[in-house]
Length: 143
Image (cartoon, rainbow, N blue to C red; front, side, top):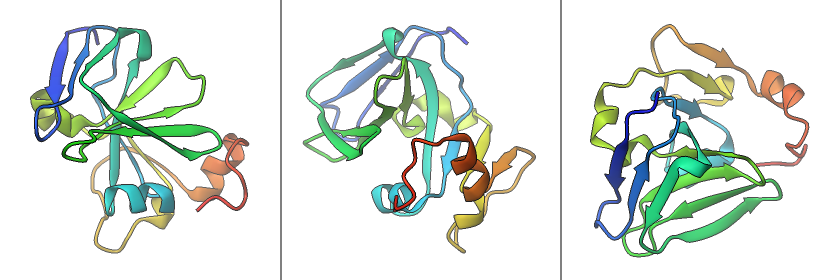
């Protein structure tokens, strides 16, 4: 999908504009790292990094040896997750008003979901073992 999107954090200090290709179907992650960062359920959608413009300061946090997370330093809103060196940036759908109608694309670590967060629908679900078998960069001792 290539329709431009503009979204912002809770306080408005950070604005994100997506003009490049993006997939307007969020994915969910239930790994412990994402649960800790989000408070329970992490959602993101994929966009080509070259087509994403960020106005305003963000704080970047190297959450692992292979990824960074960014957030607004004023209000704390999550802005993105990105694997090191990837040309894809995973943006938070809650920043964009258009996301209200987007269907869920997939879940990873579905077997690790908190009891209070079970998602319904017909979407792809991947267990911890299945995900880690396909992504060898995830260290065995990752949270």
